[in-house]
Figure 1: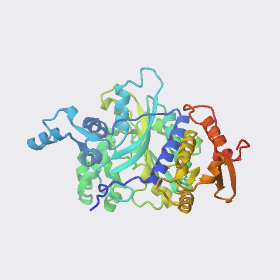
Figure 2: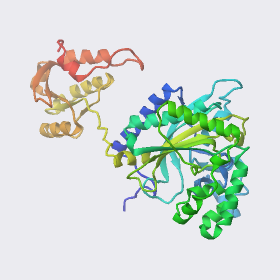
Figure 3: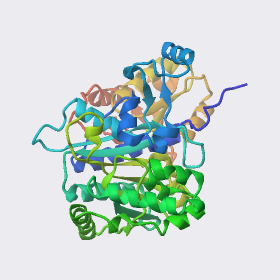
Figure 4: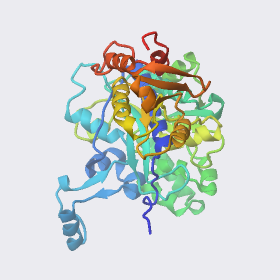
Length: 461
């Protein structure tokens, strides 16, 4: 019996992989205009990076993290009945999100020196959560994220929100199908009192709340706002709102962010129940949701400010903020809006062989074309000429370069335009020379890559 991919994972087949590459390329180009640079961190971190950064009371840490153990350490923990005998450096977890690891890297490598400009970084890659697999929620999923460390100004918050919205626009998610929710979660000065008021509210209504929300009253009461139980949602609609409890500084910051978004023409909805799922958020939080076709998994991206996270992972006080967007969720949003289009494989041309005697020349020409930056294919299965033309058509090749013994004896080859079916004879040596002019150039060379249209219309051929 053939094996299948593990439950909750999906193979990224060529069409999806091309879309992923297009998505990351679009992010890199857009984010760079805002001053963001790429960073890659390990797929696993010390477990403490997540427990201290994200929070042990969160669902992500408490229920969803994949623990990583070497074979030897697994045996030790199994023999002991738990992993308490393992050293901290032996306790590892696959990353459930990207922010904590990036902040750890910023702290470790001192990327925000005292008085220096903020570190503006972006990343793309797989994340892992042991959730119940469902549409829009996988155990291995892909995120693109951005983090800004070292800035306290509300302009940084507004810039990040605008950058996220611009990204979705460039990817083709219709503006009419998205809504941006924003809120402020306060800071260490005003949130503790608010958190206690929500805790007391839950306890006062515990008979109406689900068991999970009753547990959250003591561990993480604000997470009750995210409960999908309809009764809990109805009860929490009457809970105290953070916007009524903000201190003067947090209120001023929040009002400034909204004013900047208004000036930029960014539409938003204030949602005082928006708390996001991670403990490290302070002040500004935001989330982009798709209004139709996504069911309960309507969020496609979001983030916020986390001014205390650097300290939580062992660094000095460093303000920060960031966002992450889900690739798989965004694809679902594009599908729901009818805006998802396949990015076809690009094939510039196909070299067809009449018989085996011309294969060495065909292969030499194939290599020259690829060295010149062209995507060219040829038959490697000994197919008939008719079958080779069918393959060229299936690959979407615009031109087919036909090599036969009679033409080759004259140093010529036939070139067929697959759209017009027009054919012409070209000089192989001249074509090879022209390809060599473009081939072998170092990366970043100023030469314009050759195209087959240019090659076949050249007077030199």
